[in-house]
Every structure is written in structure tokens, then in C-alpha cells.
Length: 317
Image (cartoon, rainbow, N blue to C red; front, side):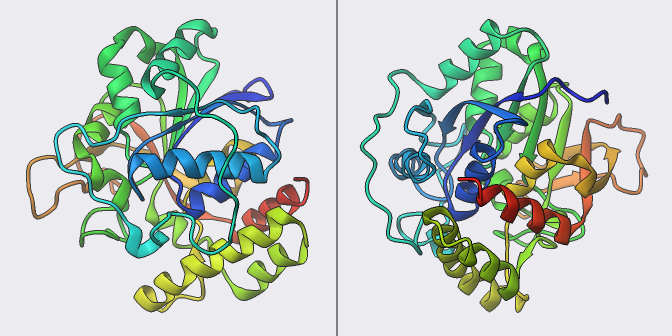
């Protein structure tokens, strides 16, 4: 793919979440690469009222109170909401003590903002960056089919193949929460890049990497270190890993430096009927079917390069 015009226009669709917060901060810290048109919030890691609040807390932490933040869908398309307080804490941003936001939520619904923005901007210039369940994106596509062809690319965090699942044995949380929405998005024909657990479980915040965040000695650096400290307690207990995976920042890092990642352009289907494997990303990594490729499914990451980028950029906020 030819390099896009810089900065790339993006909408971050998010359910913050500590790792969402780090992703949003990385985007704000990279204005030469990314123009954040707005944040659209969805229910996921925690319910919608908290994700909408957390997104604004992060904007204010970054000194970006002018950013447009919209509240979106409060439940999946066809299922009851499943949340992840057991990972992220009851607020979704447990770890640091950050003040409540004073900036307002925008009037209007996140889905309408996505639709209006894609209609207003030139075709092929807006990239969608979903960091949570795909409810807002799928709802926008269903409500306004004319926007689908205008999306430049969707770069999302979700799914897993070799790593299996993290909320069920076969499903990653973001896809599991709203499999019907994921199915709509993966069948949309929009170019998709997927950051699955296969990649994000290699982006581990080891102690030296977390110390580097704290050593920035800025409100952002300290808050990020405190967030990843909190997050880590859960993952270490669960996986016995060297640290917490930073899932969502992989999406933003890819937009800044795609060479940090390697993967395969393959077919990915979403399981929507079996309760046993609901929300599984059935990734044809070995190309054993003749189903047409619909996603760039990442598998490798230069973790040192990723953390160097993250630390360098966060220092700018």
C-alpha cells in the first residue's frame, strides 16, 4: 500500500481501559503522523458511562480538552453486555488517581459522528481505529451503507489465532463482546489490519520498560506507569508472563510505523452461532480454504522498537 498523506486522519473508537488510554496518548503525542478527528466511546471493558468519562480524563491528562468525545452504543447488537472489571478495575482506569473531567461530552451519538465525518471527508482519507467491541462501527455501516466504501482502512485490536482467547478458550474479549458487529465489519470489504493477541501478548511491559515510563517524570509518564502496574497484576497472575501486554497501542503504533509488525493477508471469519466458540476469529493462517483474504492478520512485533517509539512519543506530552 502506498504511504498515506500525513498526518493520517483517524477516529479512535474506544472503551477505555488502561491500554486504550496508552493508545490514545500515543496518538495525541504524534500530531505529525496522526490527526485525531474524534474519540467515539463504546461499552466494553466497562459500561458506556465510564468509557465516555475515561476518554475525557485521558484527553485532559494529555492537555487536549478540545478533542471531540462522543458517547455511542451502550450494548452489543444482539447480546447482553459483558465487561472486564476483573482486568481493568471498577473504573476501567484503576491505577493512577486522575481527576474527573471538566470537558463536556459532545452532543449527538458516536455513530452519527462516524457517519457524518466519513461523508464530509474525502473518500479514502479517514481510518477507523477500533480498540474495543465493534458495535459503533457496525451500527454506522448498517445505518449508512454509503460510508463503507469511503473508509481508508480499519486498524483494530481484536481476535487471536495461535494465542487462542482471553475471555473464553477461543475468543478475545473485543470480538466476543459483540460477535455480530465483528462479523459485519469483517465482511464489509473495507481493508482491515488486525492486531490480535498473537501480537499483543509479545508487547509486554517488563519492569525496565515500565521504569522508562516512570522515569519520564511527567504526569503522563507516571500515569502510564501506574496504569500498566495495575494491569500487570492481573496478567502476571493469569499468564505468569514478564509483564502486562499493551494490546491497544499496537493499533496506533502500526499507523506510525507499520514496519514494527509482520503478518499475513488472510481470510478471517467470525463465529456467531456456536456458544462454545462464540466470537472466535477463524483465521486461515495456513491458507487451507479458498475463502478470499479480507484482513492483514498480524503475528509478529519488534517489541523493543515498539516500546522505544512509545516512550519517545509519550515524552512529548
